[in-house]
Amino acid sequence: MSEGHVNTALYALLDTLCPMHAVLNATGHVVHAGPTFEKLCGDTAPEGRRFLELVELKRPKLGAGMKDLRRAAGAKLHLELRAAPRTALKGVLVALPDSGAIGPKNGVIVNLSFGISVMDAVRDFSLTSADFAATDLAIEMLYLIEAKSAAMEASRKLNLRLQGAKIAAEELAYTDTLTGLKNRRAMQPVLDRLMETERDFVLMNLDLDYFKSVNDTLGHAAGDHVLQQVARRMVSETRSGDTIIRTGGDEFVLIFAGLTDRDRVAEIAGRLIARLERPIPFGDEECRISASIGASLSCDYAQVDLDQMMQDADCALYVAKDQGRGRHVTFDKMMRLARDMKGPIPQNRDAR
Amino acid sequence: MHGLVNRAVERFTRDTYGREMWLGIMQRLDLGFAEFEAMLSYDDEITHEVLGELAVSLNKPMTEVLEDIGTYLVSHGNLEALRRLLRFGGTDFVEFLHSLDDLPGRAQLAVPDLSLPTLELEDHARDYYSLTVGPMAGGRIAFGAVMIGLLRAMADDYGALVFLDHKGKRGKVEIIEVRLLDVAFASGRAFDLGAALR
Image (spheres, rainbow over the protein chains, first blue to last red):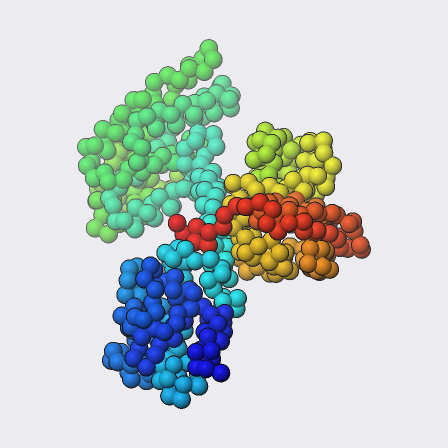
């Protein structure tokens, strides 16, 4: 059998087992290329060209000669196509004997694979499953990437919907159903966030006056109506960034983030009371209520202590109520002194 | 039944018969929700009820509805991703048939808790096969009819001409006969490996 015949049989075998290979002769020129490697080389056939002119050996770092290449036999090679898009390749080579019994004398056989760049390569070279050996896992890898992406997308959508549902549930848990204002549960998270971001704020305790008499004379329906109107008026008198919480039956807490001016606090409180004192029509009746307000400012404290601020707002509210109805008082340290001299006052409004 | 299966029934109904039809069914069944979540699991009974109500609403026998669902899965544009995943099974219809045994395993690679009925292909001659569908753990859904619709649509996709016949149930499994009349009857639809990346 002639050498040519032997090689033809060898090349046919290689084409099936590893279609992305190249057979090099002793001078490093390609004498045969597998069909997939041919595809990678584009319009100019690789046969007759020097392998290292088509492909750059990135690692291991060796010389450009055939002797150097043969030394890399069996090692894992990192290569790159010299032509755009400079696809990264993995490879392994075997050195051929000088007897010429297998392939060209002193030549090498290089087998290549895409490794992780397979996705881009399939697109760049329009490869089909016929371009890979039947045993190659490339197709399975592409399948997995697509299947996993589809599954991930479905999971991502589920997560988005669950997140939406969570926000809605939290919204509901923090909402006072009668007035649409926030409820007592919402207060701590709001205050915590203010403390975390170290923003100054004003805490305003507001109690409705004469509300009990509306309830007693006109009934609960009227009471509910009044509370809803009160909520509306408070919302319209405040900015969207302010927080209004209904902490109890006719008790509210308002939180104004970023507010440090005592005059502004007094102005807001006065405006709120005036607005709430306007008669609220209910059927043929007119409900008249008022409100008392006690406020404390975080900027008055060297070290902001939430409990202390709430107590002081309560203290100011107590002073306001003491002065009659429809009054507003902003806490200052003198009140604490006066309070200490007068004896204990309730720690919070619930105790009253 | 896995949410993906329920979701497939839902998508089929909505895409083929409209949103009103689907919402009507869900309202009559009063399950407490109107849409299935693809990545959650549901009691098999729910899938049964939905399919039953769907067949009644369409005034069609259940097997026909199931076949239509199978065809829909491959041929509707909204489920192109699924068609592509199936086409990874082989370069022609015969190769695809031979990949069916691996289908439940392939599905689980992507979604581990998705269980599909066992599929087993037997070749009697070059153009004559039988596919055993099932059994499926705890399953009461007859997947055979769905497979017929799906195989018919896949044959179209590959451009092959086939004759499919449901040979009925044998114990817990269903038998489908596949006769291949022409592997290259029409040109079929293109399948570009890298298309998902473009």
